[in-house]
Image (cartoon, rainbow, N blue to C red; front, side, top):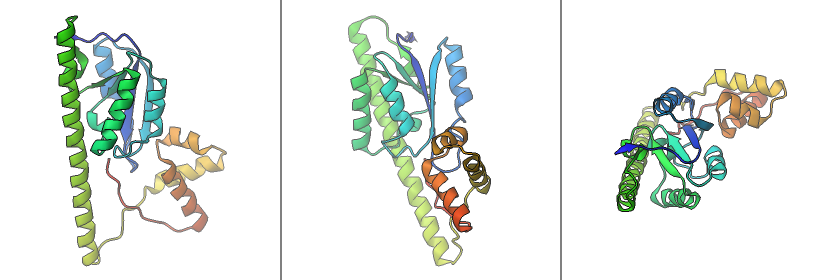
Length: 220
């Protein structure tokens, strides 16, 4: 097996959930991976959205920008998908229609090439498809298990009178409202802070009402 040599552009996709996580956390890992293999990343698509949602603005923008033979580079398959089976199949179909290749840093077979033999190439592609399916299923199961544990914990806390909800990141809310006051648009705020429009809406509502709210955590 040899290292893959991309024929098209390399596009990096970085994602964190809608909670206060840093979507750029994996930037160093992806950049190091690219440098070590002589790859030039033409664009970064960064967003804070749950991987359980198919419709993600930056992911869809990446797919729209992609041309045949481009590479969709992610740190881990779970950055691309925590989708239910039907939605994962829909996403795979979109990727196939574009004739682009998914490369995950932590899945070596996705970034190795099998050579010029057509049979070997097809077999290698089938192996990668199987691995991606398996890892996407594992990511979805992990998501569901964590959600279940979360709900169980909330139910127990409510029974014991201890549940207060998940406290918001007040510093982020303050930053959002400062940017709004300075005339920044919601889209600009999303790019600067890496937050979702839902978070911006909550920050604006908090400022308008003067009430400090809580929010339930949404896992990746």
